[in-house]
Image 1 (cartoon, rainbow, N blue to C red):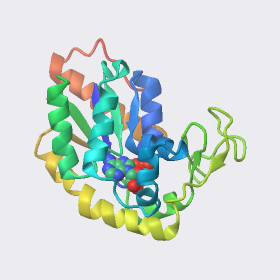
Image 2: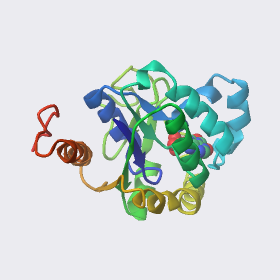
Image 3: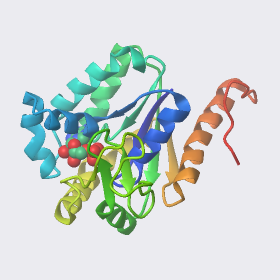
Image 4: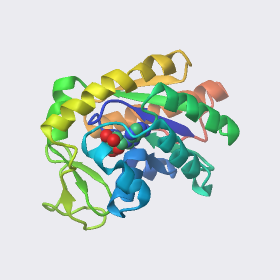
Length: 232
Ligand code: AMP
């Protein structure tokens, strides 16, 4: 199954993607995480995008589409994947559609996670990530069990350098200008679903999984035998 998580920075895409990876056994493709790894390793690409990311600007569509295509060609994407933070512009969405066609990948299901602006600001300023594995925490909602230590790999928990108040405001403006138009774009394609991101993490997750169940029901009439039902 090919899922795309859509929504402003801070709505919980990364948190949900990690849960979905565990549940569905398909990889998370986070362009932000891929770029942060390039920056951390000081590769030519990393050096190229470091300042852009620090300022909260968008990296060029060409660069993003190249790294996504390369990633989607890997064998672990054969049974599906979860796109997190990509696409972020209409040209990226159009580029993605061409890549999916070229690689003969089936329909993409878009799930928008909706959270009001004021809550996004509150969440982003309390967001932290693991410097080693990139796992996302929120000190208010999903803190690590042990202070400053990643539950997953024991790495150090840090604040992203683009999670400062000024940069957050700028990233949200960019979201409104460049990424929000994707909602309309995907709504017209009839593969769009929307979940309330204000609910507890587990309920958002259940709602996302229920989209999957509904899709299976639509495909198989009422038969949903090969689908793991969500907990109620
Ligand atoms: P994220 O972790 O998704 O919030 O991304 C962090 C930063 O990486 C963004 O603010 C952009 O500078 C860059 N970035 C990540 N994904 C994309 C994308 N699809 N298009 C352009 N820039 C991106």
